[in-house]
Length: 321
Image (cartoon, rainbow, N blue to C red):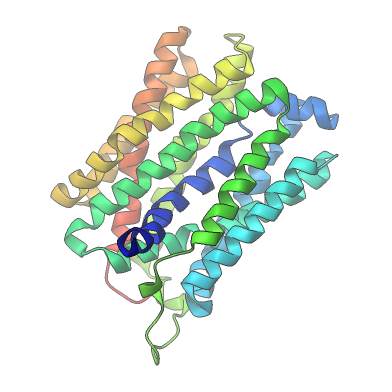
């Protein structure tokens, strides 16, 4: 019983990687339905993606440092609670403006979980196995990305608002479980400083992450539009198409982590970037649905090489914070 209780927070640490991509991408396959419900076009409804990801990205610049100062366990728990409340607000929002505001709050809350969960992994896992641990975390992120458009598409068949109720419930469960207790900072340890992280090597890797995410993982909503306009797919069918990207990540993220441990993060990122460049062209121009689906599936593998690779490059580097 004690072993199960001790392992539950560690399992929740990995499960936390699921929540961010799920919450961010759940709207991708139900933008037309959101637009119809709030009285705007599907293009205007796409701002629900930016409303989440913009504040998320900006807050991430300081959230890891602030969270380490405030205490990882306490900060992550509080962020999950805020995330749950913001998700309920999204489910109840009667207008696009209120939906955008609640989505922005979701993004800010997620920014106080993702970097601290990754830092927690680096603190708990030996350096020689860090790639594999990050691969498992990446698999959970891929699972969130995979299930998000599918759940969103299924919810849109009934009422898209139910998708946010599911998100709120997941965040509430994670808030109750928390993180492993051994992550508490030792007494007397100097608080982390933001300038300790602003090193040229970290900034360079961050730029690679920006390009990799924008060119691969960030294309899901564009593909959803193309699937509707060119191939005439329903919300559920769009969700199934987008799901292939995440399924590939689930199946291969752990192996990508092992590859990182063997050949290094830099080579793995380069491999994923080169492969992803060609796949993006196929996804955006191919006129055959099966070819688009196959290319999007393989792009999920390339994205894991980039995203898990950049995380390993930062967390495996020397220096404080």
